Length: 159
Image (tube, rainbow, N blue to C red; front, side, top):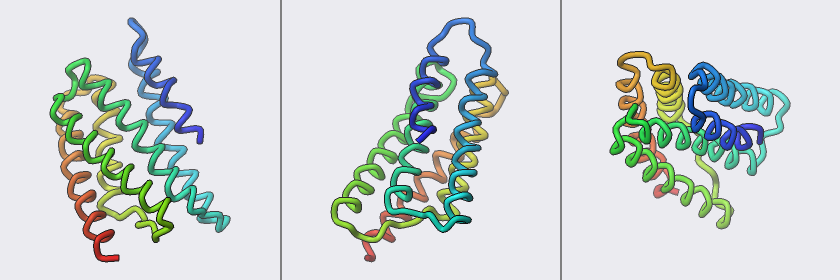
C-alpha cells in the first residue's frame, strides 16, 4: 500500500512553494510504476486476492484524484474536468465497497479502464511539468475514464 502512503507525500510536495515540479512528477510517476510492478508480481506469483483487486484501484483513484484536484486548484486543469473525475471515481469507490460487502464478483480492470489510466498518467505528468497541451491528454483520459465507468456499471448490472 505504498501508493496510498504516497498520496500525502504528493500533496505535501505539491503544496510547497518553490519546489521543482520534477520532484512532484517523480513521486506521481513512481506510483504508476509501482502499480504496474505490483500487479505483475501478484499475477506471476498467483497471489491475486480479493483485497488486492479492490485496494489496488482504490490506491490508483486516490493518487489520481489528489493530482487532478491539485492541478485544478492551480488552474492547470479546468475545475469541471476535476469535478467529472471526482464524481465518477467516488461512484466507483462506492460501487466497489458494495461489492466488497455483498461478496459479489468483482469486475476486473478492462482495457478501456487501463487505457484511461495511461492517458491520465501521461497527461497529469505533463501538466505537472508544465508541458504545453498536456491538458488535452487529461481531457481525453477523463473522457475514456467516463466511458470505462459506464462500461463497468453495465457489467455490474448484468450480474
